[in-house]
Image (cartoon, rainbow, N blue to C red):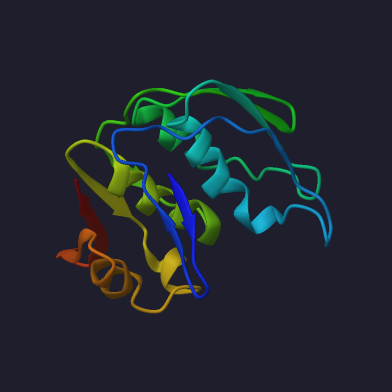
Length: 157
């Protein structure tokens, strides 16, 4: 259910999955390529099948292999990802490859069942200051952990 007020929008998706939606990146005012990874993740847990087409940059699907390790059903065909939504993702240790992919993997960890650890978080630190604190303020069970010289984010559902 969606309720729109004067200064807020309330969304209640309790016990519901989003519906899959096709996305094609495009220059402004089109769909931003910087949101492609997050919408690919949304489609990975959505009801139905969707495509995400990257029309701006090459090699922007580095997060797909990591999402597949978490149980996402994704096929790559050139610059298009075909995503069949699954009821849930499973926790895994994943590795960030760039800023956008790392944000996607953190969000995937928050919706996955179990504890997900995201390695190489220096990518996310380049664009999101104290992301774990901000997400925790929204109710996320997430923390920064250290394993010797390696810094990681752990997300638990």
